[in-house]
Picture: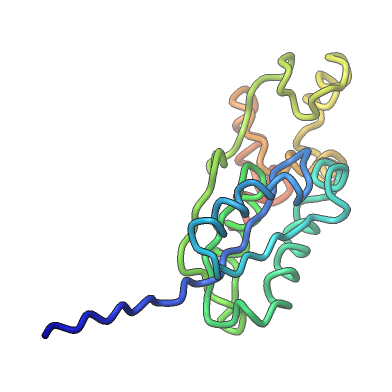
Length: 183
């Protein structure tokens, strides 16, 4: 007689993080899918500030700090977890991964969806300018100041905005697109 024992290893928890111009509720379909596939899976859905507006108008350091607090304050993650970041959420979770200390929960796997991790640029006069929905002249004005402290501290996406027409400013230093340079 052959005895088959089915040993199912417990899946590590998953931390999900939404993108820019979104709230944590936008991740509900992905979370539901993960739980349908793995019913006992623990999923932590982190939020940046108050969601939609803060995902646009919070400086990137504050956003990373909020994500880090969301992670380190959850005892279910102490043995490690999987990261799943969507869009800007991938940037924020990447910062956690690259800056975590030994006392913080470790990342077992890093997964991003549509997170261009080498910076982002889609034009100044396009529908996906730095702040979609603003009139073109406002986005053009922002483009003139995109690597200044003011814009870097005002618009989250400025922290990873990689304008190919201003690469010297982009790569100049800490305050010029400081988010990618601190990782």
